[in-house]
Length: 252
Image (cartoon, rainbow, N blue to C red; front, side, top):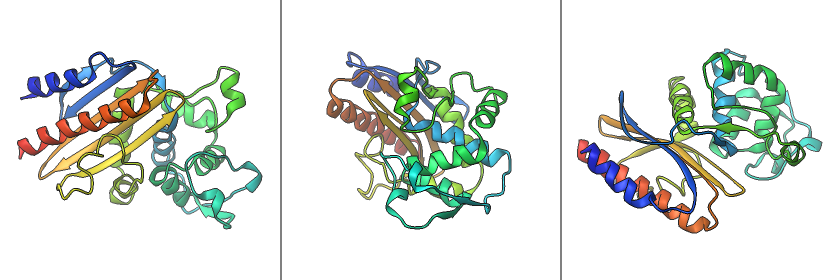
């Protein structure tokens, strides 16, 4: 059955105009892998590393963080639209994951320390995941500093985050960017729970997810870069997600 899944996914992705890293796992079994350890610009997947650094170091999630409107950044998120200037750390984390809020992410990074987060990632053995700049920091990017991760690292980071319990898992389950891997079946009545985090940037699209159906689950990470036809790329995400969902349903 896993051979059939691999063949279906290869048919979708072979000949794509982008490079990609892919990993599909169920339990301890690797079902499909392609360049799973290759390093990609992480876009918003770096927020998984930030989240785990905060949770694993058992920082006080009730601590108050003052946000400076002068340091708001664009892109995804709602923080810059709100008038509140003091937030609990856990609320900034919720915004960072559920609406991929870039400003909230930057305030968390500033509160915890970029070097502290990167040292955490290194100590945890994440070889391809690097935090080297704030979100939406075009100046740092122009200087050659970017954030990176891989398909295998991103799945491990998602697993670690979900192990922190249901409140954290709910940030992923209610995550608002669902137009990639789960788009074909999401809100269609199919009883598959999805816990995912996307990333997107210039010529970059990613999604890492856990699909749960009945007593079975599967993890999938698809990271892409270099596509010149984004609509076609997103359609391939939808197709990959659909065949994995079909495989998962057949396990029940």
